Length: 303
Length: 275
Image (cartoon, rainbow over all chains, first blue to last red; front, side, top):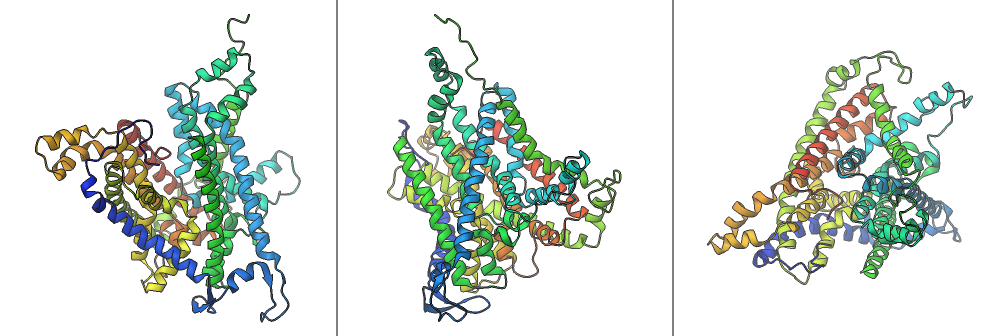
């Protein structure tokens, strides 16, 4: 938060014109983001118009459709519809897995970079930041090119004689996972690095003087101290992975559908059920809000 | 008693290895595409010698007109959205950081960070639904508006971070010497804030330039930006000219990030990831 914690005095040179200064941002975000979100919430309770759009008639059909199958004309006895539940569960599992993988690679990297001498540290950090700023679409396309059936990855494995036939990765959940992990890895490294950079190494020294082993120091001293950075990194990977569209779309297929693909299909594809897409968006958004609230609560506890 | 420590507490075995692996993972796909964009062979996996033919094709080939108009749209949209969102962000940062304590501060911060917090796909469809509800024609204008909204927090965060590091005594001194609030801003605060503003603008610019998901939903028919043009093209398979185009965009992004990094370092450090 933009804050005044830590004894800093609150500067108020511009307090008299504060309202005018904040107005443009409130107006723009309020009208073009907050209002559209509220409209989506309303749409999720309306009746669908075929081929896109809505009929202004209250209905819970969009939410009902997630859980129940009532047949083509909606008059059969409801049975549990697993299609969408599966998509949501798959999204959560994929996002969690991507978070764990990014943490496994990202934490040691952030630690290593943060403990370098100032000059080399800047270079390491720069190297990690660059892919962060390269277009996500281009990165995902590059990954697809690399792992295609007859792409360089398979050619290399064939060339080395490690496999006899191309290893089919594209269109599998594994490929989508690889894409998510690859897309959001820098998001994990940077916040952990930021925490680690402020870490006081004498804490480690003190622990070592008291006969703690290296791993005890890591587990009992370093990780608790830089926990805010780790949590922030996990959120920055988990949240965009949960709603990812490019990785499942380009690297996956029909069997690797995630929430993002489902929402896209409702507004762009042939299915064209706006209330259903709006409901899916609202469910995704509430999941994100729960994560962010848990985060805010854990941060409040730390202070 | 143990006098000297038996090991270097900073050192963890294997962490260097993981760091190298991390960089290997991050760079391999990009480097592979860069290398193959210089491949002379028509079959995109076999290496047929070094050639610039795909770069020539990007600029002179059948699809070059499409790419050129997409590049023009991308650049002008990113400039318009980058400049507008930076101006909004500068005002907001001064209001938040120099506005004293006020009741709606945390709500205001939540609103400012909303475009980053909401999943991009949700922002995209919400904007689409909203624009069609109010009858706003989808096209160039709708892309610019959506990009301004999306870019605000990316410009705001580095600018606010920079402003927090500047003591208010400078403006106060100027005002004590009878400078108006505007003069104190224009001649004192603005020059000190400039590096933060510039790096905020560059980040907003690159975010707009790179955006695919929001643009894809609200571009309407006929208007393409480079990412949507590339996405449309890779639907039919990854062709070598797309790899050449991707390489060019990649190098452009790297140039901008390097510039932003150098400016940020010169101005006392303000970048993404800090707040």
